[in-house]
Structures are given as structure tokens and as C-alpha cells.
Length: 337
Ligand code: SAH
Image (cartoon, rainbow, N blue to C red; front, side, top):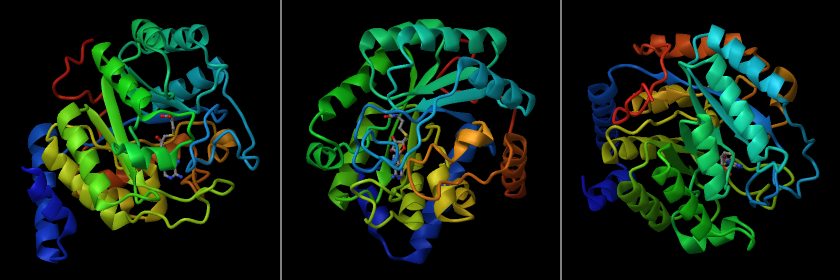
């Protein structure tokens, strides 16, 4: 599919063309992965952050955010609960918190891999040095999520402070790839300053980099940030983009993100019907979950991990999808690694 075909699909207002796009994207996903949706247990390890991204609720200068970090014992405890519930991938996500230095993180990753050798560990801890990514990979980390946020350099500079660099973020993605991680990138839909042209830059970048995973979700304003009063991105635009990303990268792992579930009660179902194949229920301890407030009203139902996993599983099964207790690696990757 050419980028001009994709641009047409993104902009058409013909409802029949949109329905056909979703059906086609779902069929491609079914052909590559079957009618299966993979679950990842998300553990939000810290909301301390040295960065000051203009959109993000846990940015350094947000005084409204009460800071926390989980201990290794807390995190391994979340994995234990997750394992019992059938999770075989754990995603450790957080702000760029210096407390999580290489020694602590490598010990944590190694401990999780020792106790759960049949599970994949995904890290989502922002920009680090190549040496750090290498140590973490050697300690057993399998995957890394680092959204590129926007592939347009000028747009990047309007979403981030001058201390952050577009080139460094892109360099980090290339390092992760070189080191043998399954790599995820992605962007927010409807972030301030985003245009059709910047979205086309994102899609061109995805087609070229060919990440194993792509995370996209609507921008949602966060209290206490410079973008607190900006308009949120739309569910429709996000679902449409998920579908074209599925066509662009047929074997990509594509989550129906929590931001989508926050914006619409049926957001994740709509995503799966348009080609998404991953859901990421929250395994963080209930006590800290509401503090990882990267945006307002973040889906944090107060449900225990067990309930939210069961709820999502039931919703997916109702749509006719199986939710296997498997790592759910990218099809191009040997899952015995
Ligand atoms: N510190 C890590 C993890 C960041 S949180 C990193 O730098 O990768 C994960 C993602 O949440 C971010 O990459 C961003 O795309 C998204 N996010 C942050 N603020 C948001 C907001 N206000 N609305 C929607 N998504 C947001």
C-alpha cells in the first residue's frame, strides 16, 4: 500500500470506505496472528522524571503530581500476581528516574527472568545510554517501548523542552534495534501542533524503521502541564490510524491503548475491530495506580488486577477473540530467546 493510498484512507469521509478499511485491517491481523489478542501486564514503576515534556502529567515541573516509586519487591509481587492471572509479558514503564540506575534495573530484570523464565520483559523507561540498554538486554530484557512521539523535527521541538533532542530519541531507537530488542515506537494522536503532514511523516518513519510494536493513543490534556487546556485527540482518528498502521506493517504488534479506553468506553473494542491485537491491563498496585497520572482521568478503575484482566478477557472473548497465556512475540522473532 502506497503512502498516497494511505493518505486517502486517512482523509476520506465516505463511511463505506472507512468500514472497508477496518474490515481489511482486521482480516490482515487475523491472517498473521489469528483471532488472538495478547495481554501484557503493565507495571508503572515510578513517576519521578527528570524530563519536562510539555504534554506529560508526570513532567518534572508538575507540582500537582505526588511522586512515588515501587521497590523491587513490589514489582516482583505484581509479576507474581500477573503470572497467576495468565500474563506472560510484563511491561515496566516509568518516568526517567535516576534511582533506577543500571545496577538496580539489571538486578530487577534478572530477578523477574529467573522467577518467570517463560515470560518476556518489556522496558519503557525512556532515553538511556547505549551501554545501559546493552546491560539491560544482557540482564534479560526482551523488548523496549520508546515512542518516537513525532517524526517531524519541528513538531518534536514544540512538544519538548530545548534540553531534549529529536536526534537522540531516534538514535536510542536505532541502538535498541542493534542490540536485538523487539522495539516499539509510536506517537500521540491529536497532540498540539499535529497535522496531516506530521502524521504522514510518522507513517513514513514507521514504514522505514519497521518496528515490531507501535503504540498510539489519543493525546489527553494533563492538569498542571503547559497543554492542560488543549483539545484532546479523537477516538475516531486513533482507530483509523491503527487500521492504516496494520495495513502498512501487517505483522506489527499493535496495542489498543489505555488512553483509547479512557476516551471511550468501547475504545479498545473498536481498536481490535480495526486491527489492534494487544491489550495492556494495569498490574500496578492499586495504591499508586492513580498517581501515574500522565493525563487526566486515566483509566484506573479501582479494579484489582485480577478483575481488570478478567474484564478485558471477557470483552475480547465477546468479540470472538482468544486471549492466550503466551508471550505473544512478534511473528518474525523466535520466542525461545
Ligand atoms: N518515560 C517513558 C514512558 C513515558 S509514558 C518514555 O519516555 O518513553 C508513555 C507514553 O505516554 C509517552 O511516550 C507518551 O506518548 C504518552 N503520553 C504522555 N503524556 C500523554 C498525554 N497527556 N496524553 C496521552 N498520552 C500521553
